[in-house]
Image (cartoon, rainbow, N blue to C red; front, top):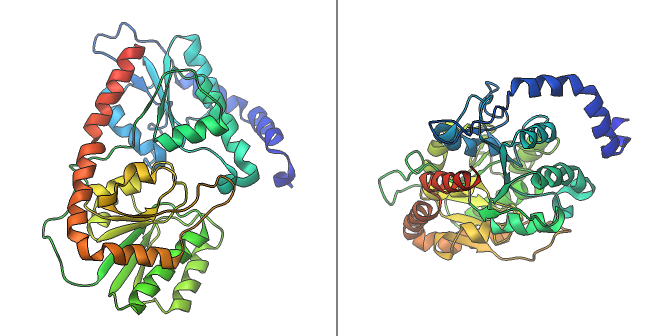
Amino acid sequence: MSSLIPWKVREGIRSLVEFPKRRKILKQHGLIHRRDNPIGISVGFGGVLDDGRPVHGGAVKLLPLRNKFGSDERSFDILYAVSSSQPQCAADLFRRCRERGIRIVWNQNGVGYPAWAGRESERFNAPMRRLRSMADHVVYQSQFCQVSAERYLGPSKVPSRILYNPVDLVRFFPLAGGQRNGPLRILAAGTHGTCDRVISVLGMLSLLRDAGIESILTIAGKFQWRNGEDDFNREVNRLGLGGFVRRVERFSQEDAAALYQGHDLLVHPKYMDPCPTVVIEAMACGLPIIGSASGGMPELVPEDCGKLVSGPVDWDYRHTLTAEELCNAVMAILPELSSISLAARKHAEAKFSVEQWVEDHRRIFQNLH
């Protein structure tokens, strides 16, 4: 029955139920403004990194900032929050910060739009719209993130900058050895939101093998739709791929580098992906990229680093790449796989260094401070 209650009403009920919880969370954050801090700027993250659980998703990018500017979350100059990993009771926390003169930096990832969220789009957008409006500076993860935010959240009057997600180039690197023998090792990694993307990748593998390309596939990450594992196993059996597909249901940030290094290329067919970190990490490990020329992908992957398949820009309907399109893209880059691998690593070094990302944030924080 709860699913029949309009989301605004549900949010109101939840706010009443969670009021004691909000009060407790806010009490944990002393929110003491540290303008007289002798050691420089201190940044708080709204408790996102301090609950003892492994860090994943949008919060991963906060770790380099914490290492450089971290605080005890009770005393800081600047609050930094990411739209895809928001603090608990974020609106209350933002208001408290504004009352105390603590500046707020908002990192904006994707938004809700009909092709992705359907009728639930506003459920995602309303909190982001409110929080972005309280920020003193907005960091957009790509030009696509800025365009989609202005389209669905409205214009923003505060200063902003586009900073692509970073990668630790020391941890994520290509293994030495050059050209190797054996089957082509293909990876599809990340959170798999819809069944059609996984079905297309499996179909791609089947077509490659039918064409005489000895190849194997790893699909790593969570399936977000109901009965995902059953759908996956059924399709693997239908295509007769049982001996050529490996399933990794979960992998941590610590496992990620080895996962990339054990493969020859990454297939990322998601439509309108705002700024996929998995693609950036894969390029840092020297993996050519096969994907959709939509969302933020054209900003991340130049022509010499893989093959992006063009398609329409459509906010209302999802256009998933077909198995045939993915297969043709893979076969197109096979003759130059080694040179594309080198180009991918060089591009990651030039564009996605975590050190430069932290330095760019230091300038933002200094201007606010």
